[in-house]
Amino acid sequence: MAPWCTLGFALLVMARFIMPTYRQGEASIAGKAADDFPLELNNKSMHLTDLRDKVVVLNFWASWCGPCVEETPALNRLEQHISGRGGMVLAVSVDEDPDAYQKFLGEHGVQFRSYRASWDLAHSYGSKMIPETYVIDRHGKIIRKVIGPQQWDSPEMLAYFDAILGQS
Image 1 (cartoon, rainbow, N blue to C red):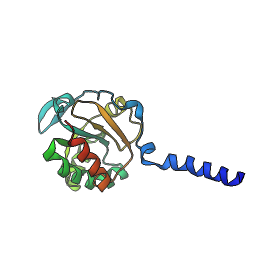
Image 2: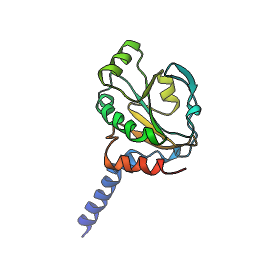
Image 3: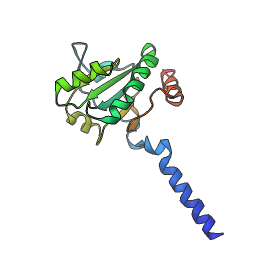
């Protein structure tokens, strides 16, 4: 009986660590106000706080990051799904080379808004790696941090965003 209990306990511990809520966790930042920063979108200077009243999917990435490349098509599809309902994908590239950044945008058909900044901005959010993504609600509060690449257009993710976009 003891070996079965030990095995069962070990399986429960392993299941906890592979559950999406663990990988996407960091409850300590949920409800924290998103750090404001200046950015330029469509040749217009603005701040993140100017995007209040929108659900913002803030994604840190780089052109040389393989997982970032992999998730780009799904981010394009997420942008299409949420843009008409008060949501937007805002990708912040940490590329140092502006030419590599521009080349990536063109080659991968990026349809969401993107901005190039330094690693300092990603670090100010607590990002240690890329891609990392922060979902920010209409009031400027972080509601979720997603570590690593995701299938942003999966039925589960689209349902998640539908629920958030349905809130006032």
